[in-house]
Amino acid sequence: MSDQPTTSNQPDLETILKRLEKAEKAERTLKRFGVGILVLIAAIAAMGQGQRVRTVEAERFVLKDEAGRTRAEIGMDPSRTPSLKFFGENGERVSEFRAGSLMLVAKDEDTRMSADGLSISQTNKGHIELGTEGLRLKITSASEGFGYASLGIGSSLADKGVVGPALVLAGNKGQGLVELDTADGTRLHLDPGLWEGKLLPGGSVDITAEGPLIQIADQQGLTAAIGRFELRNKETGHVLRTPTASFVLAGKDRVLWTAP
Image (cartoon, rainbow, N blue to C red; front, side):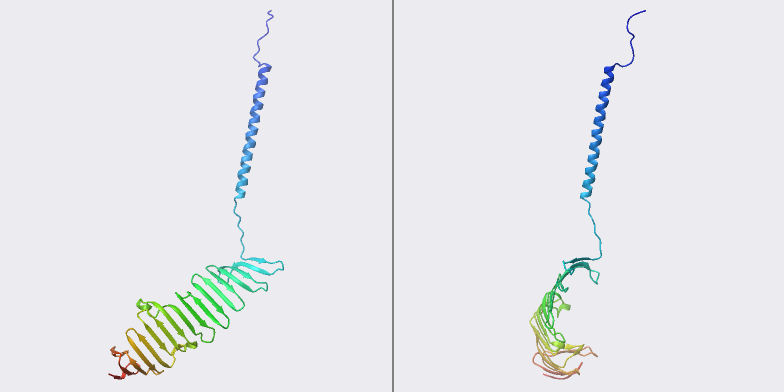
């Protein structure tokens, strides 16, 4: 029998200890990696929440003061247009902003501003418009019939492609009309006015670059004219034109007498 120790295939103690140490290191590394991944996921989630856009929906927003009085309101007006309104302490509306326009309201005054122009209305006084109907200033009286004064770019010859500076004065209920413009040379026109589709009785005066004309007409269509006169016969289509130094008596569509 030999006294030499038997060789074993089993790992010795030192080898086992080294393997355990490697396993522990691998486990610690895995844990650290897992914690890092969790921290990264949490950070991304927090960033996503910080950038989230919150939407609040409502048909009307009302701002009230400490006394419970409505002082501002955001909503839709009766025309279904978004609007912002402000109210005074007594509940009266003092201003309003709607899409494309701003309105300021006082006790006896209403001011509106928009891309079309500016208008100011005063109770029992009148109305002022600046640029609301083209490039002009228009002042309208508050009395019955609404007489007005207008200064701006006239359109009396717009159908001929001619416009120019013009001054227009109109009386209440259409009583009296004065027009002065330079769209096609100097032109002055005065007539008794028009009301409810009817020409008021009286005479008219026209002074143009083509020649002066003074007319006196009645409601039956009879006319007395001094100056350059033009009349078209509805039946024949013939047009009568007289020189500046002439006198004409005419009916609705025919000449009764002329001189020279």
